[in-house]
Image 1 (cartoon, rainbow, N blue to C red):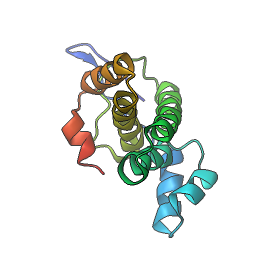
Image 2 (image 1 turned 180 degrees about the horizontal axis):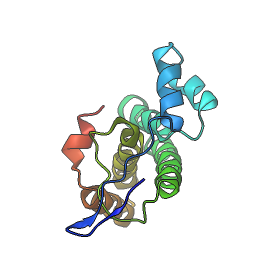
Image 3 (image 1 turned 45 degrees about the vertical axis):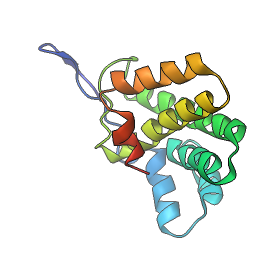
Image 4 (image 1 turned 90 degrees about the vertical axis):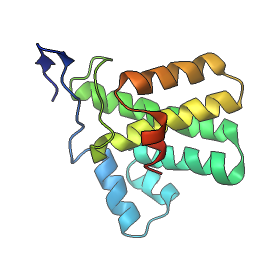
Length: 142
């Protein structure tokens, strides 16, 4: 849960360790494919981010990547809001449960740029920066 920091803005938002991404990580660690992990934990931002990254990197399909990333982004927004996030403040990349959302957000920016949806790409990159992280930090999680 995040609380207002009276000295410098909102406190960092930390998704719970037992959120949907934890279930997805467990399925992946047990050898499930990303697609199977998505069936096990469809609310997990991480699986949608991984599918988006794969579509951008391996299949060169930015339209599919956009759809996957957008799903992961919205799943992450839902989880963040349940934790008390109000659309601003840090979402630290060092906190593992936050990483699926941040990866989906970066993949959404990349896929949006690839399909010519420049305003969306810029909005996503701005949200990433406003969350207190950088494209480099999130890309390093891949």
